[in-house]
Image: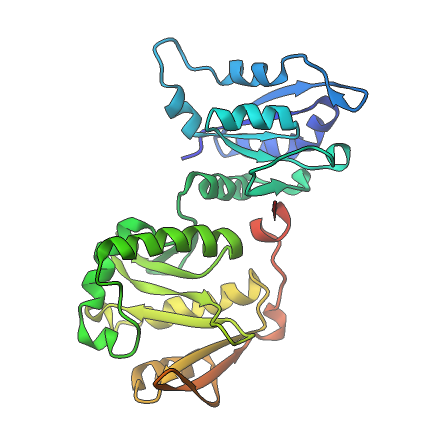
Length: 317
């Protein structure tokens, strides 16, 4: 988990980050500030990145790699950025009006509007860089978070039930292929969109299924997908989780419509979609399968545009 944040910024930009630093400290995060000055538009060699390293230097006896793992660096200096990347540190470049020409090659994201950041966004950014799952939300009985490779064994147990694979595609037979798929999904889907199919857990940590919103090729409306393992069916978990997902889609992702494609004889899922407020919108074929297409429309008062990490905080570099 994140334990320390280093703000390695140009001196006249440091005050812009004060609200962020205050919020981080209120959440128990240690904040180290390392400022530098510029001359003729370029950073002076006042050893700004060496100063950042000195601030992060562990006690004699080692532990540097471990300490780098729980720290996040935010810098507007491309020299500092490169030096920290060489140390395999987690670094978020900060681009502003004064450093538009800075070279942050290799950065997955860059920060903008640092004055609007808080603990939650920084924690999410750290998790993305460290490969840790985002917790999307909790419901009364469940936790919905991003999928990790550690979930694979639970998925195989859930998908071993014929009732599950009757209506959806099975997992890879080769476990290593499934793990590779999860890793690629985390990088390319979560990393780009910030959402997708997630893991559903009980609050005791038991994995009971998957659910989320994603995009099906050939459609311009996102799609709700869900599966709850047989031992946990008929207890209302699917309705509880999917209802929260639709709220999240409208209020956090700005989605005004969500579709569901359900096989005609999948009576349980059709009934669930009805309870969630979906309405039939015709029939479609995908491969050899026929589906009922259903559409959900977000209530107008819940149609809000996202203002979180994927919206205003990070920009794909």
